[in-house]
Image (cartoon, rainbow, N blue to C red; front, side, top):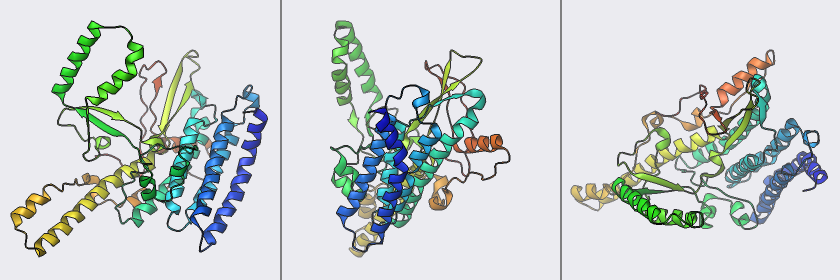
Length: 406
């Protein structure tokens, strides 16, 4: 893209978003807003985000011709206004707002438009605007997720959150879906699939692979893709409950696991460089999840909804079976096939909507360095490593509010 055109798009984006916000507010006030009118507004936002993404990908000549980090972050932030206005749309507002926030996060991860290179001595001050924006983006996503959780009476599983999606011409129909059910009907929910192989089978497969390599070591590059496909075919598709490895659940069967697919931007990880004066030739990488709180909320909600739905199924079947006079032995045997898992103990009595609250940065500016450091330490859990994959001592910071995990 031409640099002049890129600058025009970046500078005009906030104004476009203000006009789009007014159009959305006017639509929400209409009692009979049509589906076509709503989808037309959604497409405009998708197009505006895509246009900014392409503008930030332009080849600027030198740092002087590039937009400043402050300008870029303010431009990204301007999209939150029309997306928040979408929440007032009846029936579909929370869902479409959450989807657009996920898409904004995906576009930001792909091309943030920032330098993402900071000096160690001024790391806190330099990265504070970045963490402030991602915190605001995370909080903006958390609000519609919490509302959908309450409206579903604690049954929402958020499967539609854990999926990768694009807003190109081929997938625009999916991007404009107005409900989780419509998205599912369009086959637009594509998360990670798990495959497993028993340990004995895995050992046999390794022996077979070793013998094949010794017989023929040629054409490895040409056949690598085919080998990956053949290897996955030896695995069994896992169709059971979603693993809870994020909470430390153990695989007691000692299976070999493989994953296929992606959970999408909800697990998005943003990295930046740290330059040290004492080691000018070394670059260290630091990173964090941009949707850390929203991601954990969905994981916790999945556990509670699974238990809630499972208990209701058991209660409903038990009531019907008793009215029909089904013998207790038969009732219990049938119920044994309708299994469900209780949430982890720390979630059992936890009100998720109350526990997950927006991040409120301090408004005091008496000591900017101290306040910036507090904001960074409370919000992020970064991991530092060398570029050449050599592990560097991790920096684990204390989480605020509640402790996630067992």
